[in-house]
Image 1 (cartoon, rainbow, N blue to C red):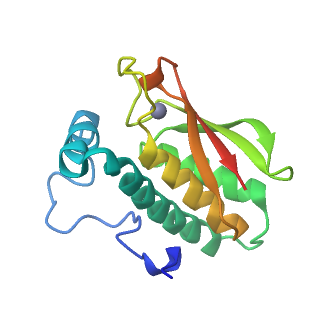
Image 2 (cartoon, helix red, strand yellow):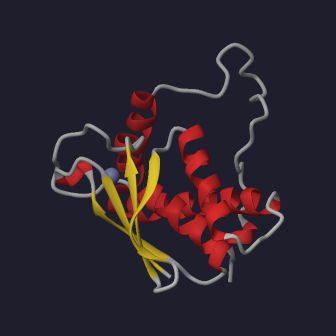
Image 3 (cartoon, helix red, strand yellow):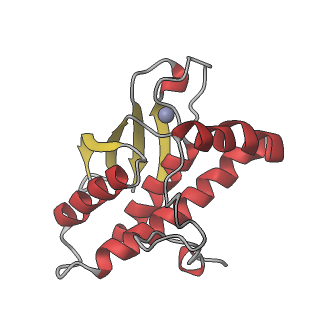
Length: 169
Ligand SMILES: [Zn+2]
């Protein structure tokens, strides 16, 4: 069975992108959304959501690996989450906060404001942030070591003004 560790992928890095001397790492949010919301649907239809979730989860796992490799106390959840918040902001994915629940009782609600995928989009009657949900799941899974599921329960795509992810450990 493939594991998340098998997906080293591109990970994340602050290194300059080779071949992007002038343009650097950043692209406008609109370009990202054209690929993410329109392009992916064209390519994979409804199955796109699961694929995007898995891609996000692999990235999240790598982000988690990066974070924990730099931590002196690998079990310090507060330090881990503080770094997660910074990286989400640094990468422009969104502004993360814990809205409810706790890691101890097995269910946490993570809020993501200014989400790169959905902030400001009209109500289309469905959640759209499967990528971010996957990233959250991968990050949490890296810390807990157990299987984690993550479901988006609030989203601009559903008429909310933020994203809310229900994480079950
Ligand atoms: Zn959303």
